[in-house]
Image 1 (cartoon, rainbow over the protein chains, first blue to last red):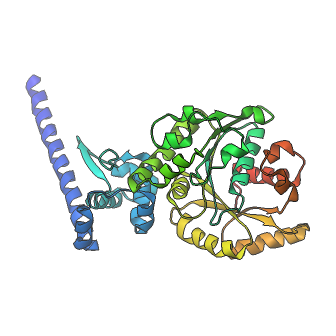
Image 2 (image 1 turned 90 degrees about the vertical axis):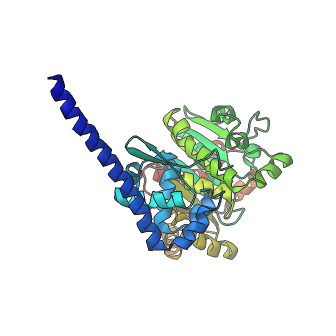
Image 3 (image 1 turned 45 degrees about the horizontal axis):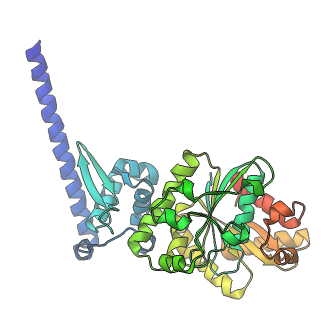
Length: 127
Length: 259
Protein backbone atom coordinates (compact mmCIF):
# COMPACT_ATOMS: atom_id res chain seq x y z
CA UNK A 1 0.00 0.00 0.00
CA UNK A 2 2.62 2.56 1.15
CA UNK A 3 4.89 1.40 -1.58
CA UNK A 4 2.14 2.09 -4.12
CA UNK A 5 1.69 5.63 -2.79
CA UNK A 6 5.36 6.38 -3.08
CA UNK A 7 5.38 4.98 -6.56
CA UNK A 8 2.45 7.17 -7.71
CA UNK A 9 3.62 10.27 -5.86
CA UNK A 10 7.10 10.38 -7.29
CA UNK A 11 6.21 10.28 -10.96
CA UNK A 12 3.58 13.00 -10.29
CA UNK A 13 6.22 15.21 -8.68
CA UNK A 14 8.53 14.67 -11.57
CA UNK A 15 5.81 15.47 -14.07
CA UNK A 16 4.98 18.69 -12.24
CA UNK A 17 8.63 19.67 -12.29
CA UNK A 18 8.81 18.97 -15.99
CA UNK A 19 5.70 21.07 -16.59
CA UNK A 20 7.17 23.93 -14.56
CA UNK A 21 10.40 23.81 -16.55
CA UNK A 22 8.47 23.76 -19.80
CA UNK A 23 6.52 26.84 -18.75
CA UNK A 24 9.70 28.70 -17.89
CA UNK A 25 11.12 27.69 -21.22
CA UNK A 26 7.96 28.85 -22.93
CA UNK A 27 8.22 32.26 -21.28
CA UNK A 28 11.80 32.61 -22.39
CA UNK A 29 10.95 31.66 -25.95
CA UNK A 30 8.11 34.17 -26.00
CA UNK A 31 10.51 36.90 -24.90
CA UNK A 32 12.97 35.89 -27.60
CA UNK A 33 10.27 35.91 -30.24
CA UNK A 34 9.15 39.38 -29.17
CA UNK A 35 12.68 40.72 -29.21
CA UNK A 36 13.27 39.33 -32.66
CA UNK A 37 9.96 40.62 -33.97
CA UNK A 38 10.43 44.18 -32.80
CA UNK A 39 14.17 44.57 -33.15
CA UNK A 40 16.38 44.08 -30.14
CA UNK A 41 18.33 47.37 -30.16
CA UNK A 42 15.39 49.40 -29.05
CA UNK A 43 14.65 47.20 -26.08
CA UNK A 44 18.20 46.88 -24.95
CA UNK A 45 18.57 50.62 -24.69
CA UNK A 46 15.27 50.84 -22.83
CA UNK A 47 16.21 48.03 -20.50
CA UNK A 48 19.26 49.88 -19.30
CA UNK A 49 17.15 52.87 -18.29
CA UNK A 50 17.17 52.66 -14.50
CA UNK A 51 14.10 54.84 -14.02
CA UNK A 52 11.60 53.53 -16.54
CA UNK A 53 8.33 54.45 -14.87
CA UNK A 54 4.92 53.45 -16.06
CA UNK A 55 3.32 56.89 -15.83
CA UNK A 56 0.51 58.20 -18.03
CA UNK A 57 2.78 60.05 -20.46
CA UNK A 58 4.71 56.82 -20.99
CA UNK A 59 1.42 54.99 -21.50
CA UNK A 60 0.42 57.56 -24.11
CA UNK A 61 3.62 57.11 -26.09
CA UNK A 62 3.40 53.30 -26.16
CA UNK A 63 2.22 51.33 -29.17
CA UNK A 64 -1.48 50.43 -28.85
CA UNK A 65 -0.97 46.72 -28.20
CA UNK A 66 1.39 47.33 -25.27
CA UNK A 67 -0.68 50.19 -23.83
CA UNK A 68 -3.62 47.87 -23.41
CA UNK A 69 -1.57 45.40 -21.40
CA UNK A 70 0.18 48.15 -19.41
CA UNK A 71 -3.12 49.78 -18.48
CA UNK A 72 -4.51 46.51 -17.23
CA UNK A 73 -1.52 45.96 -15.00
CA UNK A 74 -1.86 49.54 -13.72
CA UNK A 75 -5.40 48.71 -12.68
CA UNK A 76 -4.60 45.54 -10.77
CA UNK A 77 -0.96 46.39 -9.91
CA UNK A 78 -0.04 42.68 -9.64
CA UNK A 79 -1.31 39.94 -11.93
CA UNK A 80 -0.56 36.82 -13.94
CA UNK A 81 -0.73 36.76 -17.72
CA UNK A 82 -3.96 34.84 -17.40
CA UNK A 83 -5.59 37.55 -15.27
CA UNK A 84 -4.53 40.25 -17.72
CA UNK A 85 -5.85 38.15 -20.62
CA UNK A 86 -9.24 38.02 -18.88
CA UNK A 87 -9.36 41.83 -18.84
CA UNK A 88 -8.09 42.47 -22.35
CA UNK A 89 -9.92 39.53 -23.94
CA UNK A 90 -6.74 38.49 -25.74
CA UNK A 91 -4.97 35.14 -25.59
CA UNK A 92 -2.87 34.30 -22.53
CA UNK A 93 0.20 33.62 -24.65
CA UNK A 94 -0.15 37.05 -26.28
CA UNK A 95 -0.39 38.81 -22.92
CA UNK A 96 2.50 36.76 -21.60
CA UNK A 97 4.63 37.97 -24.49
CA UNK A 98 3.63 41.61 -24.00
CA UNK A 99 4.14 41.44 -20.24
CA UNK A 100 7.59 39.96 -20.73
CA UNK A 101 8.34 42.71 -23.19
CA UNK A 102 7.33 45.32 -20.59
CA UNK A 103 9.67 43.57 -18.13
CA UNK A 104 12.53 43.83 -20.63
CA UNK A 105 11.73 47.51 -21.15
CA UNK A 106 12.08 48.02 -17.39
CA UNK A 107 8.47 48.99 -16.68
CA UNK A 108 7.47 45.83 -14.85
CA UNK A 109 9.00 43.30 -12.53
CA UNK A 110 8.38 39.57 -12.67
CA UNK A 111 8.30 37.11 -9.83
CA UNK A 112 7.73 33.38 -9.86
CA UNK A 113 5.71 31.75 -7.11
CA UNK A 114 5.55 28.01 -7.64
CA UNK A 115 4.12 27.46 -11.05
CA UNK A 116 2.74 30.96 -11.47
CA UNK A 117 4.52 34.03 -12.78
CA UNK A 118 3.35 37.35 -11.35
CA UNK A 119 3.95 40.68 -13.03
CA UNK A 120 3.89 43.92 -11.05
CA UNK A 121 4.87 47.56 -11.03
CA UNK A 122 7.75 48.04 -8.67
CA UNK A 123 6.68 51.23 -6.96
CA UNK A 124 9.27 50.98 -4.20
CA UNK A 125 12.45 51.10 -6.24
CA UNK A 126 10.88 53.40 -8.82
CA UNK A 127 11.47 56.50 -6.73
CA UNK B 1 -21.70 51.18 -15.42
CA UNK B 2 -19.84 54.46 -15.02
CA UNK B 3 -18.92 55.07 -11.42
CA UNK B 4 -15.85 57.26 -11.64
CA UNK B 5 -16.44 60.32 -13.76
CA UNK B 6 -13.71 62.75 -14.78
CA UNK B 7 -14.68 66.21 -15.99
CA UNK B 8 -12.11 67.61 -18.37
CA UNK B 9 -11.63 70.19 -21.12
CA UNK B 10 -8.97 71.49 -23.48
CA UNK B 11 -9.19 75.12 -22.46
CA UNK B 12 -9.84 76.73 -19.11
CA UNK B 13 -13.10 78.50 -18.33
CA UNK B 14 -15.32 75.99 -20.09
CA UNK B 15 -17.30 75.26 -16.93
CA UNK B 16 -15.67 72.09 -15.62
CA UNK B 17 -16.00 72.96 -11.96
CA UNK B 18 -19.56 74.26 -12.38
CA UNK B 19 -20.44 71.03 -14.18
CA UNK B 20 -18.75 68.65 -11.77
CA UNK B 21 -20.11 70.32 -8.63
CA UNK B 22 -23.64 70.48 -10.00
CA UNK B 23 -23.63 66.99 -11.51
CA UNK B 24 -22.34 65.58 -8.23
CA UNK B 25 -24.96 67.60 -6.32
CA UNK B 26 -27.69 66.37 -8.68
CA UNK B 27 -26.78 62.76 -7.89
CA UNK B 28 -26.67 63.55 -4.17
CA UNK B 29 -30.10 65.19 -4.42
CA UNK B 30 -31.31 61.96 -6.00
CA UNK B 31 -30.27 60.11 -2.85
CA UNK B 32 -26.86 58.88 -4.04
CA UNK B 33 -23.62 58.81 -2.07
CA UNK B 34 -21.21 61.01 -3.98
CA UNK B 35 -17.65 62.28 -3.60
CA UNK B 36 -16.10 65.08 -5.60
CA UNK B 37 -12.34 65.71 -5.79
CA UNK B 38 -10.48 68.79 -6.94
CA UNK B 39 -7.59 67.73 -9.17
CA UNK B 40 -6.83 71.23 -10.36
CA UNK B 41 -3.77 71.57 -8.16
CA UNK B 42 -2.47 74.59 -10.08
CA UNK B 43 -5.59 76.63 -9.47
CA UNK B 44 -7.72 75.01 -6.75
CA UNK B 45 -11.26 76.34 -6.72
CA UNK B 46 -13.57 73.75 -5.20
CA UNK B 47 -12.89 74.98 -1.65
CA UNK B 48 -14.18 78.43 -2.61
CA UNK B 49 -17.37 77.18 -4.22
CA UNK B 50 -18.11 74.76 -1.41
CA UNK B 51 -16.87 77.27 1.19
CA UNK B 52 -14.74 74.80 3.10
CA UNK B 53 -11.40 76.52 3.39
CA UNK B 54 -10.54 75.10 6.79
CA UNK B 55 -9.92 71.56 5.68
CA UNK B 56 -7.43 69.81 7.95
CA UNK B 57 -6.16 67.48 5.24
CA UNK B 58 -6.18 67.94 1.50
CA UNK B 59 -6.45 65.66 -1.50
CA UNK B 60 -2.78 66.55 -2.06
CA UNK B 61 -2.00 64.68 1.17
CA UNK B 62 -3.85 61.59 -0.02
CA UNK B 63 -1.92 61.55 -3.29
CA UNK B 64 1.30 62.11 -1.35
CA UNK B 65 0.42 58.94 0.55
CA UNK B 66 0.53 60.65 3.94
CA UNK B 67 -3.13 60.17 4.93
CA UNK B 68 -6.04 57.85 4.18
CA UNK B 69 -8.91 59.08 2.04
CA UNK B 70 -11.26 59.23 5.04
CA UNK B 71 -9.20 62.02 6.58
CA UNK B 72 -9.48 64.08 3.39
CA UNK B 73 -13.23 63.77 2.79
CA UNK B 74 -15.29 66.68 4.06
CA UNK B 75 -18.95 65.83 4.69
CA UNK B 76 -21.10 68.47 3.01
CA UNK B 77 -24.32 66.47 2.99
CA UNK B 78 -26.14 69.20 4.91
CA UNK B 79 -25.74 71.51 1.92
CA UNK B 80 -27.96 69.21 -0.12
CA UNK B 81 -31.63 68.40 0.48
CA UNK B 82 -32.73 64.79 0.75
CA UNK B 83 -31.08 61.65 2.05
CA UNK B 84 -28.12 61.64 -0.30
CA UNK B 85 -24.53 62.03 0.84
CA UNK B 86 -22.18 64.65 -0.55
CA UNK B 87 -18.46 64.57 0.24
CA UNK B 88 -15.58 66.61 -1.12
CA UNK B 89 -11.80 66.19 -1.24
CA UNK B 90 -10.18 69.54 -1.82
CA UNK B 91 -6.97 70.68 -3.43
CA UNK B 92 -4.77 72.78 -1.15
CA UNK B 93 -4.93 76.41 -2.33
CA UNK B 94 -1.79 77.54 -0.46
CA UNK B 95 0.91 78.88 -2.79
CA UNK B 96 3.44 76.56 -1.19
CA UNK B 97 1.23 73.54 -1.94
CA UNK B 98 0.70 74.62 -5.56
CA UNK B 99 4.45 74.97 -5.99
CA UNK B 100 5.02 71.57 -4.42
CA UNK B 101 2.48 69.89 -6.70
CA UNK B 102 3.94 71.44 -9.85
CA UNK B 103 7.40 70.10 -9.09
CA UNK B 104 6.46 66.42 -8.90
CA UNK B 105 8.35 63.95 -11.08
CA UNK B 106 7.15 61.09 -13.27
CA UNK B 107 7.51 58.52 -10.55
CA UNK B 108 5.39 60.53 -8.17
CA UNK B 109 2.75 60.88 -10.90
CA UNK B 110 2.87 57.13 -11.46
CA UNK B 111 2.22 56.48 -7.79
CA UNK B 112 -0.49 59.17 -7.79
CA UNK B 113 -2.24 57.21 -10.54
CA UNK B 114 -2.08 54.15 -8.29
CA UNK B 115 -3.66 56.16 -5.44
CA UNK B 116 -6.44 57.37 -7.75
CA UNK B 117 -7.10 53.84 -8.99
CA UNK B 118 -7.25 52.65 -5.37
CA UNK B 119 -10.28 54.90 -4.75
CA UNK B 120 -12.36 52.38 -6.64
CA UNK B 121 -11.87 49.87 -3.88
CA UNK B 122 -11.69 52.17 -0.85
CA UNK B 123 -14.71 54.29 -1.74
CA UNK B 124 -16.88 52.39 -4.22
CA UNK B 125 -16.44 48.86 -2.86
CA UNK B 126 -15.70 49.35 0.83
CA UNK B 127 -17.75 52.46 1.59
CA UNK B 128 -20.57 52.05 -0.91
CA UNK B 129 -20.11 55.34 -2.70
CA UNK B 130 -22.26 55.48 -5.84
CA UNK B 131 -20.23 58.03 -7.78
CA UNK B 132 -16.83 59.71 -7.70
CA UNK B 133 -16.34 62.95 -9.60
CA UNK B 134 -12.86 64.13 -10.55
CA UNK B 135 -12.70 67.82 -11.41
CA UNK B 136 -9.51 68.25 -13.43
CA UNK B 137 -7.40 71.10 -14.72
CA UNK B 138 -7.57 71.90 -18.44
CA UNK B 139 -5.33 70.53 -21.15
CA UNK B 140 -2.78 67.77 -21.27
CA UNK B 141 -1.10 67.46 -17.94
CA UNK B 142 -0.31 64.72 -15.50
CA UNK B 143 -3.03 65.23 -12.91
CA UNK B 144 -5.72 65.43 -15.59
CA UNK B 145 -4.51 62.43 -17.59
CA UNK B 146 -4.21 60.44 -14.38
CA UNK B 147 -7.85 61.26 -13.69
CA UNK B 148 -8.86 60.25 -17.21
CA UNK B 149 -7.07 56.92 -16.90
CA UNK B 150 -8.69 56.25 -13.53
CA UNK B 151 -12.18 57.20 -14.74
CA UNK B 152 -14.89 55.06 -16.36
CA UNK B 153 -16.39 58.01 -18.17
CA UNK B 154 -15.05 61.41 -19.21
CA UNK B 155 -17.31 64.43 -19.43
CA UNK B 156 -15.68 66.77 -21.92
CA UNK B 157 -16.71 70.40 -21.51
CA UNK B 158 -16.35 72.67 -24.49
CA UNK B 159 -17.61 76.02 -25.75
CA UNK B 160 -18.17 77.08 -29.32
CA UNK B 161 -15.02 79.20 -29.13
CA UNK B 162 -12.61 78.68 -32.03
CA UNK B 163 -9.65 78.42 -29.66
CA UNK B 164 -11.34 75.50 -27.93
CA UNK B 165 -12.88 73.52 -30.79
CA UNK B 166 -9.73 72.30 -32.57
CA UNK B 167 -7.92 71.38 -29.36
CA UNK B 168 -10.94 69.50 -28.08
CA UNK B 169 -11.18 67.56 -31.32
CA UNK B 170 -7.52 66.63 -31.08
CA UNK B 171 -7.88 65.53 -27.48
CA UNK B 172 -10.84 63.34 -28.36
CA UNK B 173 -8.82 61.67 -31.08
CA UNK B 174 -5.41 61.48 -29.44
CA UNK B 175 -6.11 61.19 -25.74
CA UNK B 176 -9.43 59.68 -24.69
CA UNK B 177 -9.63 57.18 -27.52
CA UNK B 178 -6.06 55.95 -26.90
CA UNK B 179 -7.12 55.09 -23.37
CA UNK B 180 -10.36 53.61 -24.70
CA UNK B 181 -12.45 55.94 -22.55
CA UNK B 182 -16.15 56.49 -22.94
CA UNK B 183 -16.78 60.19 -23.41
CA UNK B 184 -19.75 62.53 -23.37
CA UNK B 185 -19.49 66.03 -24.77
CA UNK B 186 -21.10 69.00 -23.05
CA UNK B 187 -21.45 72.09 -25.16
CA UNK B 188 -21.53 74.92 -22.64
CA UNK B 189 -22.40 78.64 -22.83
CA UNK B 190 -24.42 78.24 -26.01
CA UNK B 191 -26.13 81.41 -27.19
CA UNK B 192 -29.85 81.16 -27.88
CA UNK B 193 -30.56 77.45 -28.27
CA UNK B 194 -34.21 78.37 -27.57
CA UNK B 195 -36.29 76.40 -30.05
CA UNK B 196 -36.44 72.66 -29.47
CA UNK B 197 -35.98 71.89 -33.16
CA UNK B 198 -32.93 74.10 -33.22
CA UNK B 199 -31.55 72.28 -30.22
CA UNK B 200 -31.65 68.82 -31.78
CA UNK B 201 -30.26 70.25 -35.01
CA UNK B 202 -27.38 71.72 -33.06
CA UNK B 203 -26.86 68.46 -31.19
CA UNK B 204 -26.55 66.57 -34.46
CA UNK B 205 -24.17 69.14 -35.89
CA UNK B 206 -21.93 68.91 -32.85
CA UNK B 207 -22.07 65.13 -32.95
CA UNK B 208 -20.98 65.19 -36.59
CA UNK B 209 -18.17 67.65 -35.91
CA UNK B 210 -16.70 65.89 -32.90
CA UNK B 211 -17.68 62.31 -33.71
CA UNK B 212 -18.49 61.55 -30.08
CA UNK B 213 -21.69 61.11 -28.07
CA UNK B 214 -23.35 64.26 -26.71
CA UNK B 215 -24.19 64.47 -23.04
CA UNK B 216 -25.95 67.81 -23.28
CA UNK B 217 -26.12 71.43 -24.37
CA UNK B 218 -26.16 74.21 -21.80
CA UNK B 219 -27.27 77.69 -22.81
CA UNK B 220 -25.47 80.75 -21.53
CA UNK B 221 -27.40 81.68 -18.38
CA UNK B 222 -26.86 85.13 -16.92
CA UNK B 223 -28.16 83.80 -13.58
CA UNK B 224 -25.15 81.54 -13.33
CA UNK B 225 -22.77 84.43 -13.88
CA UNK B 226 -24.74 86.51 -11.43
CA UNK B 227 -24.43 83.82 -8.75
CA UNK B 228 -20.63 84.38 -8.97
CA UNK B 229 -19.95 80.83 -7.88
CA UNK B 230 -21.55 81.51 -4.52
CA UNK B 231 -24.00 78.65 -4.52
CA UNK B 232 -24.58 75.08 -5.58
CA UNK B 233 -26.89 76.05 -8.39
CA UNK B 234 -28.97 72.87 -8.70
CA UNK B 235 -29.58 72.98 -4.95
CA UNK B 236 -30.47 76.66 -4.61
CA UNK B 237 -32.43 77.02 -7.88
CA UNK B 238 -34.37 73.76 -8.22
CA UNK B 239 -36.72 75.14 -10.90
CA UNK B 240 -34.11 76.78 -13.10
CA UNK B 241 -33.66 75.33 -16.65
CA UNK B 242 -29.98 74.69 -15.83
CA UNK B 243 -31.03 72.38 -12.99
CA UNK B 244 -33.30 70.49 -15.37
CA UNK B 245 -30.58 70.08 -17.98
CA UNK B 246 -28.21 68.74 -15.32
CA UNK B 247 -30.88 66.33 -14.07
CA UNK B 248 -31.23 65.00 -17.61
CA UNK B 249 -27.44 64.57 -17.88
CA UNK B 250 -27.37 62.68 -14.59
CA UNK B 251 -30.19 60.43 -15.82
CA UNK B 252 -28.26 59.68 -19.02
CA UNK B 253 -25.11 58.81 -17.08
CA UNK B 254 -26.98 56.64 -14.61
CA UNK B 255 -28.82 54.72 -17.33
CA UNK B 256 -25.77 54.48 -19.54
CA UNK B 257 -27.59 56.34 -22.31
CA UNK B 258 -24.83 58.57 -23.61
CA UNK B 259 -24.71 57.94 -27.31
